[in-house]
Amino acid sequence: HQHIVEVLGPGCEKCNMLYDNVIQALAQSGIGDRVRVRKRTDIAYFQEMGIFITPGLVIDSRVASKGKVMSVDQVADLLQNYISVQDR
Image (cartoon, rainbow, N blue to C red; front, side, top):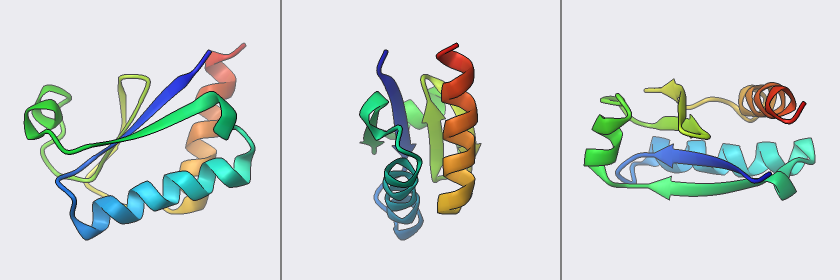
């Protein structure tokens, strides 16, 4: 089952940093083959998801983080915990 990770932001530096950290976290954790990553720049979508301060991180339609740049390690921990629970 393919998981969807979305990085929400208008294209700001912090949004790009979070996107890069997500890509690195997936490479480190070895679960990249089960995850598709998308950048979302649609402000109406941010609001629909309840994210009013970017960047936002959404995993399988659930808001995981908003308004901060998570480190590579934080993202890796979050993804591994979330995906291992979902795939049981």
